[in-house]
Image (tube, rainbow, N blue to C red):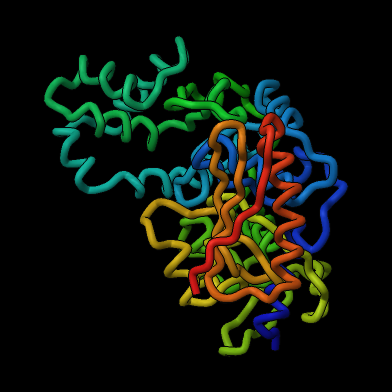
Length: 364
């Protein structure tokens, strides 16, 4: 039986949060099975908190050289992944993208065929990058009875679109522009992945996990059959509630009392919603605070491996302030560690600030 703390330390080890890793950024992105990228800056912070000597330009160079891209994958949300993974995994998740197209959007298409919309959109974005809004307006010239917003959403669901620079670079503003993965990356030069591969990658980055966890992370169904097919490539455990957990035989399982440093997780960090529940990293009461605004996942701070605060950075007249909002009272020794780590975060995220400070706002 694996306890909650067993699962917590396993998660931290596999997510490179017990100690900063020597991995190169691209290798880390692949090890993590992608980094959530709903906004330009969070992937930079997510890699900074996991890697030694990470610099903003390290990731910017990967994006501008096309070694890494932002594209919709798991749960149809934007992910920063290697070019290799973008090409390998998108076909497996095409159905997830199409299911994400709401019934209301389908109704507003006014009978426009999804395949025809995707084909017309491909011609446009492979001529030059378009934002989704621009794409919808352009497609409305062919389907004037359809809603341009719905047409843009249908094109995004039907095509493997990738965001092109400068969007995705540190501090980028405005709406992203897209072209197709094939146009931007070519065919990837390697074999396509299978769903089995995707499950194994998930377990390496997030295991041990239940089938429901795997499905919650990916958006795919029917993964019980995949687990059965993998057979003796997996090992089996149970959690404290008796749920069956699957894992890789040689994956790390640190002692539950392994010390863990204070860590600042980026907005949308995958550790918070890669499972059917979040108990291995935060309590249900804290989950309500963290996910209080639909579609928004704030930066969070870990103490002893669990979420204990929400953070944000504000800028005013040359001063950068890291505002930490504890979810309950944090012991003085942990406040000191969070302050020191927060100062390092500010030095990374606000190098041009003339003054930096860490401020705690009480909430308990």
